[in-house]
Image 1: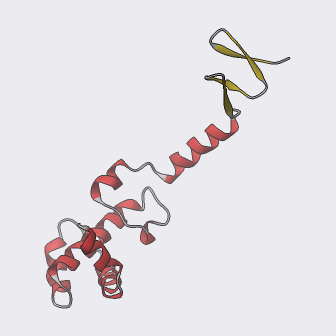
Image 2 (image 1 turned 90 degrees about the horizontal axis):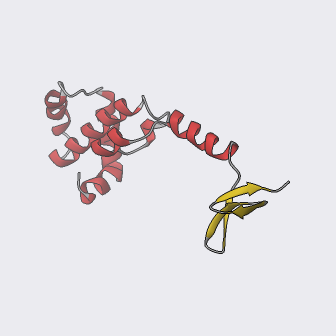
Length: 123
C-alpha cells in the first residue's frame, strides 16, 4: 500500500470501506469474493487496501489487544513484538537495574565508583 492509498483509507469513505471489509470477515482464501462484493461500491485500490487491513487486523489480535484500531503492513506485523512480551521486557528493564550515567567517558551506575573496567557499588 502506498501513502496515497493509506490517506484514502483514513478518509471517511475509506473508513466505511474498512468497516464493510471487517464485517465480511475476509480471509486469504475468500479475498477475491470479498473484493468483488466491495468493488461494487468503492474503487479497486481502496477495496484492496481495506481487505488487506481487515485480514491483518484479524491476525494482529494474537499480538495486540487494540488491533482493530491499528494499521499494519504485512512485513511489520510479522516482525512486531507482542504486547505481552513488550510489557515483560519493559518491566524487567525497569525493575532489575538502576539507571546508568556517563562520567569521564565511562558508563557507571549511580552511586558506584569505577575500578578498572567495571563498576563497584559503594559501601
